[in-house]
Each structure stands twice: as C-alpha cells, then as structure tokens.
Length: 384
Length: 58
Image (cartoon, chains in turn green, blue):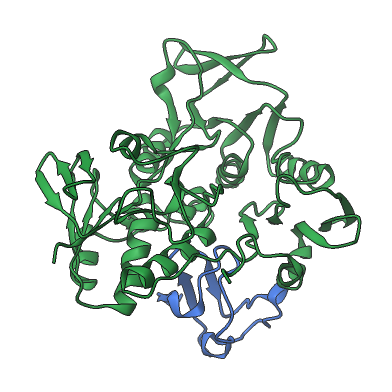
C-alpha cells in the first residue's frame, strides 16, 4: 500500500499526524515540507515576548524527532512541483512520491501589503517560525516598530512588542482595531487599552510607499503624513494557498473546496487547515483545524467521519484587554447589546427572537465564555 | 508545595497551577490532575489529554 502523503508540516499537517497515530500506529505516512519542518505552536509567535521565549525556544521538536516519535517519514527542504491526480503521484524536486491518499495542508500566504517603493523588501511578514526568526533578528538593538494592520495578529504583535519596550505604531485602515469582529464599544476599549500600553494608532490610514531615510524606514501614508521607524511588520491577513491544487485540476474558490469529509473533487485528495474551504467556510483558526484533523484522521483510518464545527470562539491574546469573540454568521440578522464596566465588557449578538448568535467578551467577562458558547448554534452541525 | 506549569502543545497556552484559571472557575492552586477531563484549552480548544507538561519553575 502506498503511503498517506501530507503536503505541509504546519499545525494542520502535524496535527493530522498526531491524531492519526492515536488511531493507527502503523499506516505509512509521508510528510513533505519546503522548509526544515520544525515543530512549533504558531499562535505563540505573536506573544513570544510575553512568554519570554526566543525563536529557538518556540521550536519544540525537529522534523527528525517528530518523525521518529510518530513513526512517519518527514521529507524536509523538498519542493512540490505538481500533483498528478490520475496516477496518484506528487512530483517533487527529489523525485515522484506515490500516494494512496493525499492531504493538502499547505496553509495560507500573508496578503500582499501593496506598499510601493525602494524599501519594500524591508517590510517583514511573520507567517512561520523562520519568518519570526528574521523578525526577531531585525528587532535586535532597535527601538521602534510600525505594524501595518490592526486585526487580530496585528493587535497581538502590537501588545507583545509594546510590553517588550518597543515604540509601536499601528497603521490601520479602520476606525478601531478588529472592527470587523467586534462591536464598536469593545473595539474602542481595546484600542484605548493598547494605547495605554504604549501603542500609537494611525486609524483610517493606509501606507502607500516606503523608503530609507537616515537609517530609518520611512512610510508615506495616504493622508500625506510620513511615519519613520526602525522595523516594519505587515499583518493584514491571510489568503489560502490554492495554486498547487488549481494546477492539478482540483476545485478551489477562496480556499481549496472540500466537503464535510474534507475531500476535494479529486479522488483520494483531501485538504485541511488554512488552505481549505469547508462547506464555504475558510476559518484560519486553531479550533476548526483541530475539528478537521480529528475527523480526517478517523476517515483515513477507515471510519468515514464528517467534520463537525461547534460554536468556536476565538481568543485574542492582547493582555491589555484579553478578548474572546464568537462572530455571528456573516448573513445573520440581529443586533449587539453591550454591558460594560471598566475591565469587564460583554456583548451579545441576538436575533429578533432573542436567540444568541454571537458574542464578544473583554477582560474579566471572559468568565462567561463557556456558558455563552453552549448557547450558540453549531457552525456545522452533526450530519444526520 | 511545588506547583507546576502545563503548556498546550498546539497553541502554547500555559496553565499555571499557582494561578489557576479563575475565569474558568478553576481556583488558584488547582493541580493539573484535578482539572475536569472535559476541560479544554481556552485559547485553542485542545482537550486536556493533548497538553504536555513544561519545566516546573524553581
């Protein structure tokens, strides 16, 4: 029997391997990665200063170690050149690899920031541990950092860097941080608390050009102002990596299209994690990924298991105001009601009949998380 | 009495026994083994079984 081949060794690829090994110690598994395959917890990149970790300390295992401990072959520094879905082979720069089942766990790319100018290559993006290593090296001996984007990752980095003593400025197109996820009261409070922690905001702005000016990086914003700092980080979101699938004739929309069994339109080819679009949902968060790898591990072990999404609140790791948010479905009709007292903010999104469809909790209100989560409808309920 | 810290292998969340998780109804000083089996990581939802222990602070 040819192996199960997993392309990608991020949280999705290794997560699937871990779950698979709970069910089946022996089935041959080969993982392919273009990088060194280091094992690390990606969410901890954006709060590593707070936890006092260097990039080296974030790495928990090498590819070799996890391969040995979980009985898998991990092919590092191996580029996938193409997938042949009819002969069931992955073409790589180290030769072809046949598969019985193929899992695409290739992740997502940072969205291009679109900033023009001579110094664009100095703008950092942190999408994996090696990016983070470069970012930390660039911060060495420096004082000021500009972050492009005040979304979830932008806010987490802003808080972490400000606490570590850097002068942080965030250039954010919206009027408040995380304004697409949060009701304005909580978004405003998050912005204010981050400001108290030392973060400066440039709301309603986008960076247009970047150049070097006396050893500093100078950004020109769309309001005509100029902003200089030592280091610039772009954190404006992710786009699923679909190119490899598309070239192989595998259907993709925003992500690689899969059904509730996480199967693509090609036989024996599956997709999970940030690259996958499950029943129309692209959710680049940890909990959906875990639901996927558990379901797929069971399916690959012979027990066909559709993925189920319960309500899955997302934690925003901003110590200035820790947030837990369960966004309402995009097409949901209803409204927010907010209760707030200094360090305790609770917002509920309810429809006209009073059904809870989403919530956002700030500070001490996070104690309501499990109670409210139980009242939310499942995102993808169990298949009847 | 020494208390330990446990780290979520998936997301890096740390459970510190000394501090507990008052917002989850887990009192300071609660040992890891005394946390209910159906408890999950507040950051990523990983089950208790998937946590790994990290070094106990001296």
